[in-house]
Amino acid sequence: MKKLMKCGMSIAAVMMLTGCGSKTLTLNDYITDVTFSGADGAGTAKIEFDMDQFDKDLSEALDIKASDLSLGDLGSYFAVLSAYELEVDPATGLSNGDTVTVTGTVDNDILKDNDVKVRLKVKEQKYTVEGLN
Image 1 (cartoon, helix red, strand yellow):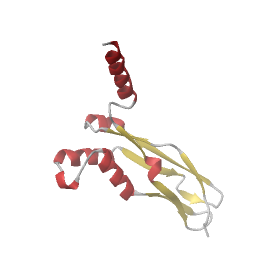
Image 2 (tube, one colour):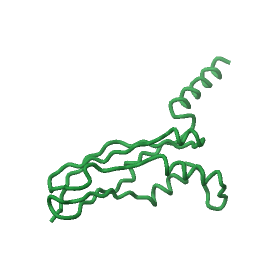
Image 3 (spheres, rainbow, N blue to C red):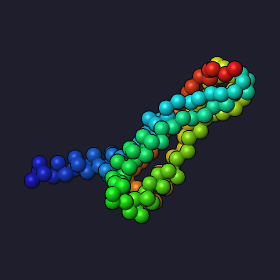
Image 4 (cartoon, one colour):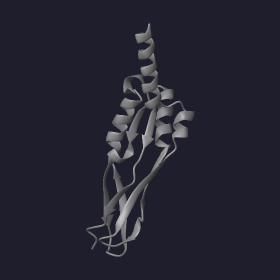
């Protein structure tokens, strides 16, 4: 009985630490590049995001199958898409050698409010501007 109780407590602790079975997707894993274009001193930056891979991983995390799609699945999917934003700063007026920072905001409350079992996170990343004319 003591072993069973210890096992149950361990499982509960693990579930609390992992968000009760929720999966976390790190948005940085889908940033394939930050591209720079334009003239030196007036360049712009753009985040390249692998939406195909994110879509695949998100569908898997949400256990969404195209053959068995429901309105609830679509609601969860769109809740995730509306819960994050990525930005690069500064995005304009760039010169070769400048440093830009990719940051993001995640509203996990949207996910909780929609009972979505996926959490998102994003870490700050820095890139050096290069290749401007």
